[in-house]
Image (tube, rainbow, N blue to C red):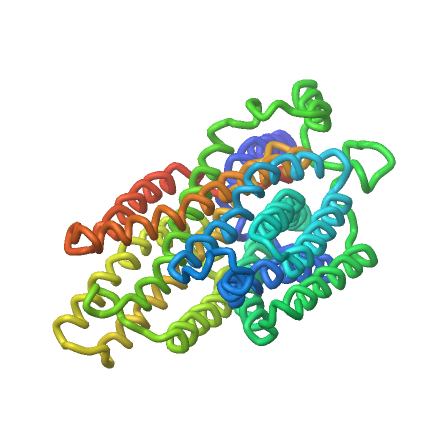
Length: 467
């Protein structure tokens, strides 16, 4: 009997590691550290508010500063340059900040980032020339590596059982910030009095004070006097221990670029490229006259639809994202969500056809826009799921900052390229009537097909870094 019992135990121990990944959903969920997550969410909320608060008054500011020499047609050109410079500067430096956080800790890097954002937004409001606007916007991008560091901290505060709940909050924060920021900028838009930038700077200072008072360090080597075996759950093999020791130093980036890391990052970059392209095309299509294939909406109607999309999208992610991940799994959800991009793009020429066929914008367009909203909500679940895969791809917590930095760099490059690419393709499509003026949507659908293939290369399960 003892022999049978021992044999049974050995079999269980040998097979358990093989079946655990497939049964993660049955593990009891770890409660979220609500205070620490709440502080991180507050910090994240301050940044989109500060960065998007310039949108309502940037065109007016450029006109009043005389940058275009009275040529109003050139305002959009200069505004586009200024708005894209943040992502260009961020792409150049975000990886450095993330790797620095692996060495000195997360909190010091967040302090530098928030302070830099506060100073740059004040400089932006006080600018009186085009080059001072450029320098202040670049300064914000150069000094701000907070997005990657915050995702790193979110990963360190969670495990495989509650990660979906935590990462579901990030899209909500950016939806809320993207709604409140322009509202503040538009309400207080008197650039000569600098109220919008002063208000945004005060939000950043408040977030900085809250972080210094309450946010705890999550980097294990900075929380403890020295590194111990309890800092991270790993095996005691010499190779594994050697890797962990090396990971605390400057790990060559090339050693991190394994397929398990590169594939989630490639997916994230494609998601960022396609999403930012969609975001710039939507208001452009809404405002384009109907005879050119748009809907001819005025700014008030455009603002109302965009606000509705943002509110519904944020509410859905917060209420249902984690439940859907638990139900169908992160990879299946990601594959479903990226598959929604093709119908999302296809709805643009369909709405153009409806307007031409009916001769006006009526209830049929309203139904089409509501269907568009459904596709947007499903599409935006891509962010929460891909964050989970990127976080889980880190071989140890000590290189989690570098992994998130690489991911954020790829996304920043995509977001710097996407707006110019999408709007240029839109203009060329309309000007030369390529595919009936819809060539831009066809190109993006093809790119979405590439993303769908990349999604199929993701691991079937999100790896539990504690095992």
